[in-house]
Image 1 (tube, helix red, strand yellow):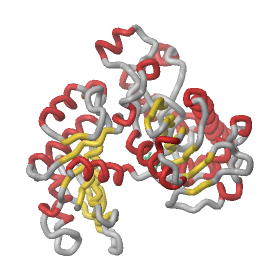
Image 2 (cartoon, protein in one colour; image 1 turned 45 degrees about the vertical axis):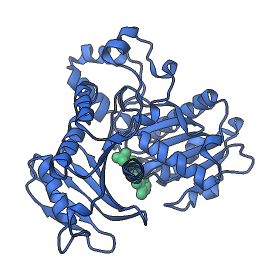
Image 3 (cartoon, protein in one colour; image 1 turned 30 degrees about the vertical axis):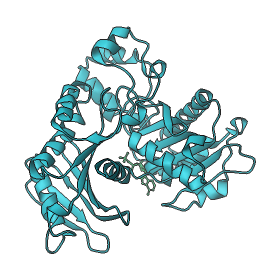
Image 4 (spheres, rainbow, N blue to C red; image 1 turned 90 degrees about the vertical axis):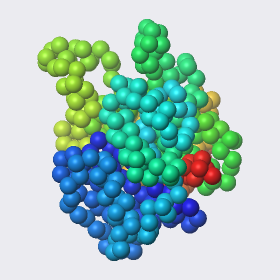
Length: 398
Ligand code: ADP
């Protein structure tokens, strides 16, 4: 079975074609600058990458380009689009209705359109990607995999904000949680690596990338997560503030005469590690600057580690214990320094890492960095959201 996974952004469309029997990626790539020029990079394992500048006025055109590359004589890996058995779409937000991955149909698209006001950035491009596929390969089954659905079992007292209840009832303001596909995948892989059924494990998974989130998982089900109504809540991220006193927002808006859009830009794109350091949103740059004695880079790293630590402590309380602490995504998988800083002085909670293993970890596989005397296992587990989407798609179309 061949499954095409599509991740459609406002000006980009990423794709991966999986062969499900071998679990291998046959081809992957991305269209960039859709609506403002256009380029496509297409990668096939074992061959040179192929990049081409091409006019991509719409998501339809981008998808057309993807199909033409996948079936191209020189660059392709299949001879006909009909060889694609199913398409899996990454969809950030399923609202309150879509509690699990589901077949795409018009009813779903209509519902997703109604929740665009609470998902203005990611909703429209995901819908465009789905519509384009429905138009171009109407007989191929399509599945939507939602970032929010892993959190559909979270209890109300954990997802309701302490605002007037009407904001929840009328405006659907609540915690939804994001990155669920990654947290779910990593929880399954961790259980597999430990040889323990996921049902028997209390886990905290730390997805630390440009966007970061932390999830408490009890027996395979998410019980709480750091991201909220939007991916803004939680720990400091590359350019997002994470948690702040909400009253800071109207105060800054009034003081500096900012519009809501300008304030949103400050919170989303000018804050986090970039805002604190004034240097970069990239962990690698901050680590290098910190090692060169840059105080604000050091401050950013300390704030990130402390933010993670606070969630670990609170989620251990919510879970009433912890079996495994997991690090994943760009920073979590690759940066031993953040794992060291986060786990430093957590021995009172039973968390100790092996400094040597942490530093000389093996990449690309689940890797145990538990230290001597630790009551909690500490693991690095690579995430793969696209493969999780392909697995869900396969399960549903079968
Ligand atoms: P996104 O959230 O956009 O998917 P990633 O998960 O790739 O981003 O995370 C980006 C962050 O991870 C950056 O801060 C970067 O410094 C760090 N990172 C990613 N890959 C590596 C790597 N190979 N080595 C060190 N740091 C990395």
